[in-house]
Image (cartoon, rainbow, N blue to C red; front, side, top):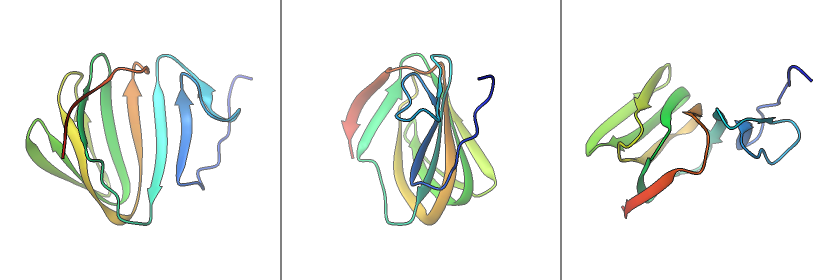
Length: 117
């Protein structure tokens, strides 16, 4: 099939990835796209970087607080932040309800944990 339609009604939807968990997602080694929705408090206690892939966080609703290379960054709805490969970052907090996209390219298992928050 040359295209796929995917419902975005879940908490986490894998739109594209090397091994999507459902047949709806596009298998791709070049691109990872996640749609996420957060209704409860959420933070990631891991600081990490990606060896080979750049990452983009697009906030569609709510706001996301990141720490990028030691600098606090608040990304409100309607904005995006880019994180280049090799730059340490962490998801500090999500102001809910929140909804957005995380895009990485190339896709792959290149996450390197550098610390815990």
